[in-house]
Length: 231
Image 1: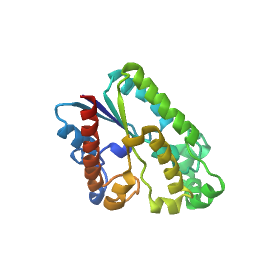
Image 2 (image 1 turned 60 degrees about the vertical axis):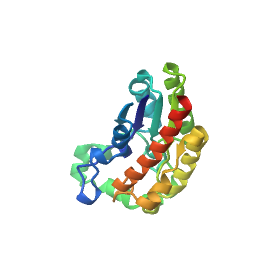
Image 3 (image 1 turned 45 degrees about the vertical axis):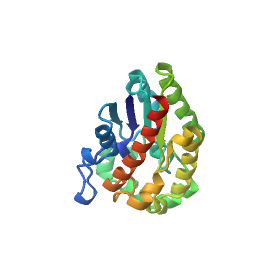
Image 4 (image 1 turned 135 degrees about the vertical axis):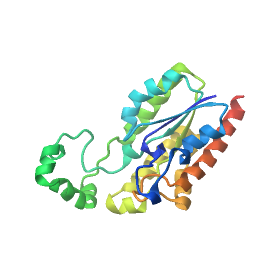
């Protein structure tokens, strides 16, 4: 069985951060799945800051062309979290020389008032409607090359700390997760049950080693269930 895990930074190892938060390649659920299903072909593909709009492009070349039997999606956080600026913003504030001259004062100022700004000006990179449409575009493109491909989607993790920084953070995540549930049905994996028990690292975005381990156990069982149905 050819399985592709297509994710953003949530699925990658993080060996370059502080000791308490480090995750090495052997710690992430993708590696654990590769080791467990060692007779299957499993690829872990991760792209930093990936949202579903960009995933339409990359999923064709990196996923669809490989004609996978099963695709596991772990994307969505970059689509739905409240943003101070629009995607691709080319404001002078983002020019390195301007940031150096101003000591990044304006970005810091916006960040300080983040909760207030995101309350009066709700903004996300990808709207709910486009999130739904983008996933179906990705799925349909993959099915062009293998009409029997199965799909799993991991939900988006809430964070009470991030919710205090950005207005509507957890509300957005619940709404986008509901879209994932609608699309993937019984193959939707609820990550928040895992995170509630095993937590996130100090950035309140990425999984701890323990959360990776628990997610692996859940995914292992789901993949075995799917394999039985197709064999």
